[in-house]
Length: 199
Image (cartoon, rainbow, N blue to C red; front, side):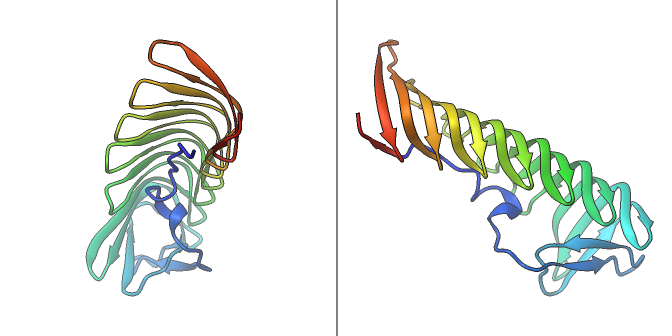
């Protein structure tokens, strides 16, 4: 039984298809930033410093598509890519606040979802890896280990019913030994294999 909820679909650029990417210039200053997902009729406005033709230092990057204001980034840049601390506002209402490296979420960060959910934890190369806490808009919560945006390792899942599961996870599914605690604190020891209970 799969109990996981991933942060992929609601997360930002992580769920978008891969493209080769390209550099895009501010039409007024000719200062460039790296654009991993180019779109037709897209322009940027960068308000920070420009070093060797690329955005560097602290500033604000505003995206426009067909002259309509799109996403926005406020924070640190280095050689045209987000590096250091920054806040990214997405057109779907999501927001990320945290550390970046080479244009990707990397280090500690918090991702706020438009539906009221939130993920707080560590990122590696743009994906949730290590320890993190994800709370859904329904109030269900997962606390534990992540790998590439999925529950992976030991974690605790708190259900809206008041029950909780403590045990192993693999690829977002219960895997290995675990314990289901009822609302009265009685418990059932279980063994799972990729989301299917086998004992």
